[in-house]
Image (cartoon, rainbow, N blue to C red):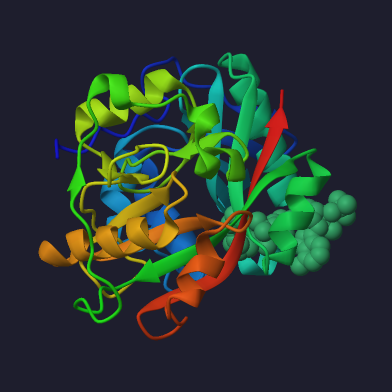
Amino acid sequence: MSAPRPEKGLRARKGPGPLLEGRDTFRELEASRDRPVIEGLLQRAVPHDYLLPILDRWLRARGVLGAFDGKELVALLRLDDLEEGEGWIGAIRVAPERRREGWGRRLTHWGLEVARELGMSSVRLIIEDENTASRALARRLGFRSVAAMSHVVGRTTGGQIGAPRAMRPPTEPEVPEPGSLEGVRALGGYLLTTVPRPMRFVRATRERLLREAKEGTLGVVGKDPREGLCLLGPPATSGRTSESQLRLLAPLGTAAVEIFETACEKTAQDGSLLEGFLPVAGPWLGALQERGWVSGEQAFWGERIQLYEVEL
Ligand SMILES: CC(C)(COP(=O)(O)OP(=O)(O)OC[C@H]1O[C@@H](n2cnc3c(N)ncnc32)[C@H](O)[C@@H]1OP(=O)(O)O)[C@@H](O)C(=O)NCCC(=O)NCCS
């Protein structure tokens, strides 16, 4: 496994200028100047926000946009440039006492304007199905769902269920066309990047799979890469669980159980926990359940999540 890729954010480009609307200001936030108000907003916006323990790393890249009522920061989000015309919005947060006033909509709308100015032609984000407010906000801005998945956190059972098979890196000729992979199709034609945190979905191309193979984050289980192929990110720290390390998994082949159990075993070897995104369509969840994986015991599949996209 190579070192994690640096966060890209918007730093490679000239950032956006501020937008002034009466007493309201929309501008890019700066770690050196705005860190205390950013931290304060995150503390109030979401209980145990997963961003707080990783705040300094998260702020290192540019791309955090904020909305101010006078001097008060009331909303923020992060816009990342995923290159190749793709953008990613994450961490939309509005101060609890200022919700339903249009701040989320106006800031996200500005974020999409910025994305367009920076040359992005589509922007994606993920939302948990239970997050009614966020889904309403995304719909209002023209986002549509392109893939449904289940968020999984798993731990190996120590071989109780099945013997995990070896995982090996693919050779270059073995890296398949993404279109031939059921996992890619079930994820709407996208790949989960294995940049440890935060995760993003990028358009699946063979170049991107080859890049992952080069970085050592693509693993083959068994003989045929079209059946047993997964993206397994390097260990990463997350504030989301009490675990200090986890690895992200996105299964791409059809051999659901083999991929999952093997990836669980591999993560356990370095003391980390497996976090994955199993497509709701396709064999994954059903195959694991048939094999005896039970939510809440060896694994948890909790929130249903959808990937949303808007064309600019
Ligand atoms: C989701 C969130 C950002 C929305 O921000 P907001 O400023 O309250 O949203 P807005 O006032 O701009 O509303 C945008 C649209 O969503 C709708 N909406 C907002 N909250 C809603 C709710 N709780 N239920 C139903 N609809 C809601 C509004 O009616 C509006 O639609 P409309 O213009 O057609 O009337 C805010 O609730 C929040 O910070 N939540 C906690 C953090 C979070 O979940 N972030 C998202 C992670 S992806």
